Length: 318
Image (tube, rainbow, N blue to C red; front, side, top):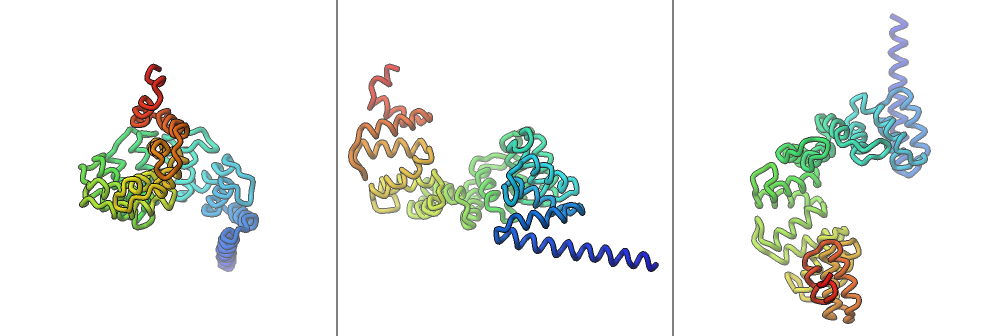
């Protein structure tokens, strides 16, 4: 009996020490003292602490406190995942998904995402939904994708709310329903998701599921553009160029079109080229216009291809 009591005290002491180490490690990590955090997690990991193992995996994946090493990250994530740690299951799946530290294997990624998703981890539910949507590692199944997006969206995950909205907009796995798409876009947009903000803006600009309202469209384009969303930068530039929902302003238009074009958006490259051609918001420069329009055409933009034929007759012969 006495021996049993001592064992209990010993275990209790270990647990208390583990909790203390966990708290100290978390604080060290938050203040940027990664080396100390790694040292503490390493001590905890030796006792089989799954959370510490997962945290070590992340330290190796991000190169915080240690030399970045995806192979080591995989090893630590696997130790924690084998204990059923949902976050580690997802993280391991993510490395298989991206081919970091292991050979890219979407089927293996799906296995680990499914384990974590089954435990209710929203990010895993979202990523599993994407695999089903795109048919990577699993048979393409829009209905299954929408099911997982809905699970994560119901937990308030902005990106999942966006993907569920997109499914409704396209009628993929669910009956096409623009009003429902708008409802989910709005949920994601109000939480700051740039993709949702942009697509909500597009809906207002085209009157899909809502009354056409250029001012509302531009408001959402602005929010997304301020986060660097190339599509929103382009659409906001077009609004200023045409005076849709905002005062016509070629200088502002060019500024936003340039931001989008710098990210490789073909539509923006073409529109910026047209601005140079017409001298709207910039000094007229036919040579620069050709450079930009040709870039867009090379990316496959049909409008740019048509413009190039008009501007560069030899291209027509080719």
